[in-house]
Picture 1: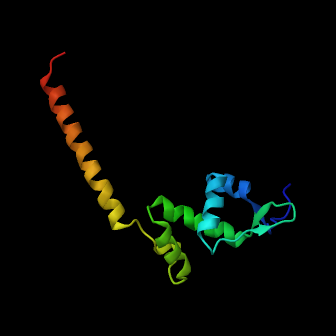
Picture 2 (picture 1 turned 45 degrees about the vertical axis):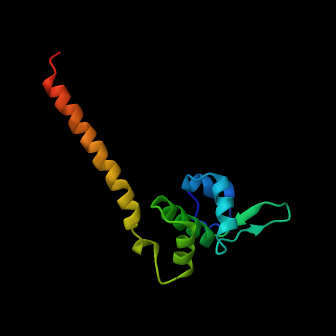
Length: 120
């Protein structure tokens, strides 16, 4: 039998790292870059994050995954009118991917033509 669902007051960097599949050094790096991400430092020197900070790390990770720069992430996170659900892949990011995909498609078509014309 499980006990009651207890809400955590703090999470360590390692715990957040494991939950979000992010290296601990990235969380520390983001904390130094983004002023809105603040840990609580214990007397032992161990840094702990509040549940709200966990949500912030989730948002930073998502924005990084879709290609946003640190400057743009700062702008989005400081502007509270924008929710993470409203953020989509940047057109510039998709513009970088599209030519690469088209090039791969052309290469595959060439290979298919060669294979169709070749007798084994």
